[in-house]
Length: 182
Image (cartoon, rainbow, N blue to C red; front, top):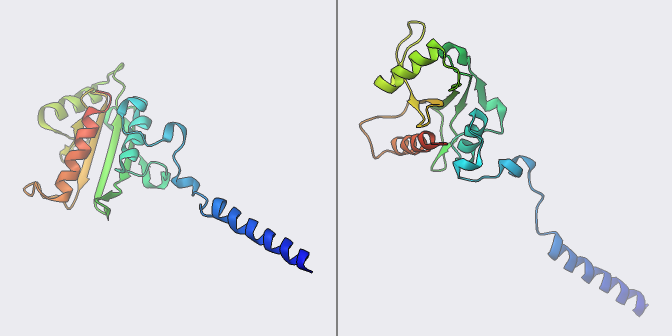
């Protein structure tokens, strides 16, 4: 009887030690784990110089949710002569949920310019805005390499309040956008 008790006690102790070594970690949610080229590097050079790479780069900074494709809308980039375009809702500013910010990213084919693309790029370079189909002017930004355009819309942004979280966040996003693959 003492032997059975000793065996059970030893088995119980082994289970306790094993659970302490192996049971403390929870299984990771696959959606939260970045692997391979999706790792959260913050160096632009680690991302491809295309719309997909720019989207992953913005995701690494937490500006957009790239992995959840329901958060992105494919845009008709041909209207502005671009190669491709996506529209995202922004994620958070300083851990606060963001509701009114959208980020549209467009990639131009710099090897093959079209008159529409040339007109849009020239307008954004000179005025910071462009218009298509006789619609109102849209404020836009070009990357320093001239390959990408961003339309940043924040309905809660007051340009006169340069110390606001929204203003500071937009300036950070613009800095990262403009310098991507400079």
